[in-house]
Image (cartoon, rainbow, N blue to C red; front, side, top):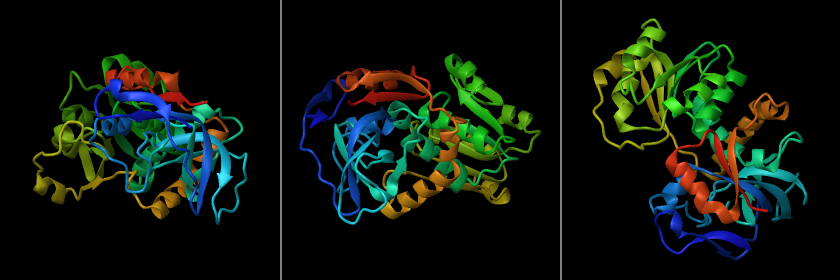
Length: 328
């Protein structure tokens, strides 16, 4: 099969389209003919050699796919060859065929294209897991969502507007993306270039109460302003550490305000746990995609032969929403 391969780790120039062995579905898995996948920031980190796939998963990049069921492994029930599906994969998305666990499959709504479906699993499930399942975000609450126009952040804004329409959303973004962030549902915007310590503006917006939830991928640089911006019993969910992994923490403030800091990753979770997350997402969020209340935001669709250009776009941080890779 055709796949994106790497002879070594490094920059976008290590990505080459070549031939790889077609995978075979094991018990409880299906083989998917991949129509589209998407570019996610962990793909770039793996390309650099800093994020190896979990044991037993494909070394090929790609964490989500949309396509058609090609073959069933033993013990699979409820699915048929030809079903249109979207799913998380531990690796292998940048290829013509990929295997996925049956418990991770979702049916693609009739209203969605393969390119749109390729955007859903990694970013939207990550946002749903960390905002609603782990973060326990409620309709009347206020959140800070860091990351401007990135895939997870735009997904989180859309999910909050659809599932918690009365909530208040504070979003940090670059100047170039602030208007589009506002258009998809942000209530209050912070230019992170001009306001790296956002504590005071958050206090002003919340009448000194602070926020109930913060979704953060920045890490060390934002720890102090994040904790200062959290209100009583507030929850900080950290899903990335792009600014570093070490920072000082005011434990007294955390104790008095009964705050929580929660670290979270999706890829390395056990198969069963991922299946439970997918089931809850399917129940609560997928109907919003079916009725087009949520439409995945796509910046650009590249062909598999343009994979280096797709990675370069993400590295330059010029995209808004998702970058899609059309496989066939």
